[in-house]
Length: 468
Image (cartoon, rainbow, N blue to C red; front, top):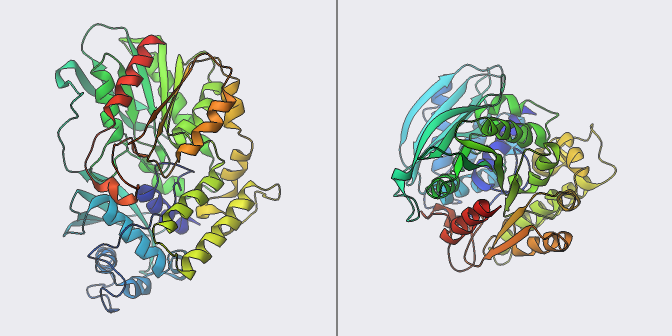
């Protein structure tokens, strides 16, 4: 269970800014990278893979970087090999390259003891970022897990709407033991009290900036809003900071993944000096937006309003299928293998939503190897109805080029909230799921192009917060 989930964590970090739990978003089939395409390298004996964990971890990543799927599979234990066949390894590598640019040199390799065996951190210099990939190695010397541990993107100039001298940042800790999370408080210059927002990230093990390749949407939002006199709290997700512990949790729900920490962040911000406790807002993105009404309902009276950026209205298992179907369509005529993968995913999604789902349903029969506990909890949540029962102001954004949460997802929200006078809907035709502007048909590859959050969205959101 743990090793399969660790693979999913990698898929989540690379592909997801929306959707489900620690596993979120669907595997993206990006254009084949030059360093890893089918047949790019003949199957090898994986040179350098001696018995010590550091060598095994290095050799495994080197095999992936050159497209040696057979060599990589030879290093995996049977469970890992079943969860990550050659086609899955190719998807992972292609998506890493789409997000972070071409593979470069391995910068460093280090080993940390873990309960299931050594964890080998392999830092790789991609074109746009240094990415640390954690390779879990069994006591017997086989690879049993893989996930993105950290991303250090190349620095970029701030967006034009950012006024660096108008705010200051400080470190802050969200939550309590054993789940404390490092965060950043961005506070406008002045005496306050300031309106303030908590940023709640999408799915996957996101950092406080929601870093994807060279882009940092939450940093843009924090700096852009603070430049207009609004304090912002953002933090690393629990699934990033405590990846191993979360991977071992077979009873996980969105409470552990997202909601508990968001509610703790709201409470922290309300008692922060220079913050107006009566004007604290929650700004959720993707999964964070999907859960925003539920969070607000659980802490009545604590939020002045909620913002839903790219919020799904479709149940998450169905949304994963929608994402996969779009990505498959980018291939023109999907291969029989892809068609079979889609058919399997549809069966898994149907089971995740069915009355026949039980706590004992195997994760292998559910989307993204996510435990039944996750889907059982979501079966009880009806976001449109919960939002309709709220009295707080709400702001919705929808990008016209978002393939992960397509524009059609906005209409059910509009219909459910048609009678509410304090709801604002805004659409941004050029914006994608990362809140960045672009052109043409959206693909995963565009996430590797440096950009900044849509300036009109930042202006609209700041104006809405100030007027609410």
